[in-house]
Structures are given as structure tokens and as C-alpha cells.
Length: 98
Image 1 (cartoon, rainbow, N blue to C red):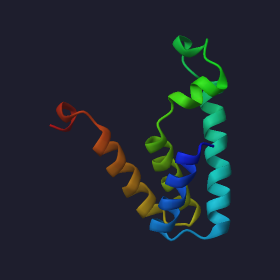
Image 2 (cartoon, helix red, strand yellow):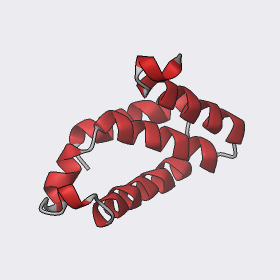
Image 3 (tube, one colour):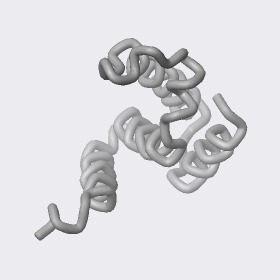
Image 4 (cartoon, one colour):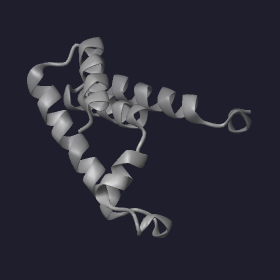
């Protein structure tokens, strides 16, 4: 995990008031997501190494995935769903929202 991503996850954990246990489990889950994303990458990305693939993943997207994971693991399902919905809405092209 890069230092920038670690810093972003730490900031998200503080903002969301995450317990150390949930933080640890969510970080492990995020590493699993990164590994799985590599294992199931699209055909156009088959020539990338694991490191090249990881470098191509957005730290902001991984931080949002972490936030959704900690909220879910904390049993805050409504808040996790709202977070996911607002994140997807923020990233949607403007034309798709009309």
C-alpha cells in the first residue's frame, strides 16, 4: 500500500470515527479487492504486472471503497448505502444524471 493511500485511509478512518479493529479488517479487505481486481482485469490490461495494475487504480476510488467497507463492517448499512450512492452519483457523467 502506498504512503499516499495509507494517509488517505487514515484520514477517512478519523473522519468516520472507525475503531482500530474495523480499520484493520477493512484494510485487509481492501487489499483483497486490489488483488481480485488484478486477477479479473479486462483483456486489454492482461499485459500489466501487478504493480502496474495497482498504480493505475485511483487512490480516491480505493479510499471510497474503504469508507463503504468500514461503514458496512460497523453495521451502519444505511449510511454505507448512502455513501455508495452519493459516491457513484458524484462520479457519474453530467449527462447521465438528467
